Image (cartoon, one colour):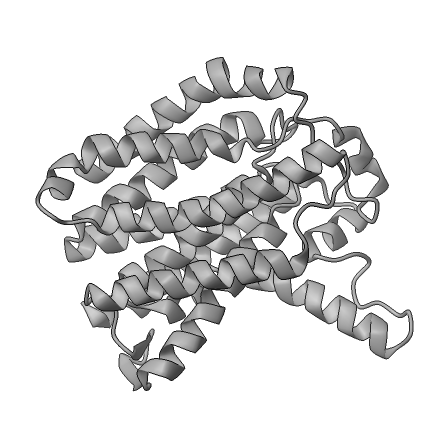
Length: 327
């Protein structure tokens, strides 16, 4: 019941806040998105669309977990608070990046090294906290096989820190079309809601439900044609949330399934750059990441978002099947 309430409340808060407060404020501040010069030429028409809209669903999630998770918090069950704070650290990094872009009126914010070091520090601190709280183990559960790969704590911590940073940046790369990152993450949030309900992990369910409701409300403004972009503020928060929830159920490898679209986007970018350098100018895709390749092939943004979301939903369903034996 708390999970349904969290979803509904977050939807309402995000929708109302976005419509009456945040979107007008971003327009007044002229917090417009600068479009990458290397992107599709027709994206130039999106220049000036307000960015940092991720603040809408971040605020919706915050209000919801405090309202619906208050009893658990008073009882010392803080999983939903840890997840929100962890995701918010990445959101803050994204906000700093967005702010620099808006301030300088160019699509360059923090340097890649600055973002990497900040994200890595956040990941390590989160893992240390989860270990101290006894919420993670140095075992990697393998979906479908129902086996655990045992690692030493140092190896586990290093591996998982890079998994978190990779997942966060993969979601960030996915945020390249109207509604894409939010739509693809809706099935992921629903997966975590279902897993939490399955195992009776109320705090995780409250957070995942709040994220689900917030994203659905955000799509009212972000679906094509977008009235606002989530910016790095929203995409890095989402990446932190997706990765954090995997560790909340102590199954980091589940990200390989629920995050299949994020992974495909990232791999397409890596393959494109690597092949370009090795062949001195040749390309695998018409443009990377892969959502731009499909754009160049003539697919509409709506079609790409629909297909990618369907793929995400199918793999999230497979993930549920993969952890069935675990229960």
